[in-house]
Length: 160
Image (cartoon, rainbow, N blue to C red):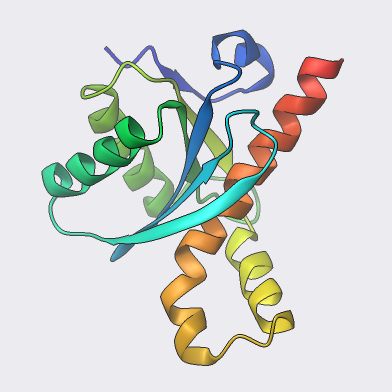
């Protein structure tokens, strides 16, 4: 049932729909940052931060966004350790993905999210965003960094 989980984007580029929006998720322990792409899959836009409750409630909200935006695939930031190994957070992310895969046939793509939050924080600081506002938007801005990484990689692979 979890054959829609994609670890290696290079080997699975054909199973990712084109001309359809993608959704990017930055899974935290308390929140889920959500970003979406345009239908041409060129630009990621931060959308919202979902406050985590129970898996069923969280999944229902995400599936609602997916339906509203006609999303063709899910990109899930995989929080690897700096040495590339997987710790408890990565395992928790994989468990979330397995549970989501039971609720949707959409491809779920894992993407190395190392430094995405750092990049998001830097961008918000450069934009002179207040500390309070940074705290409110950091998760969905990080999700857009994760999603943009996938969009750029897909564009490169499809051109090659």
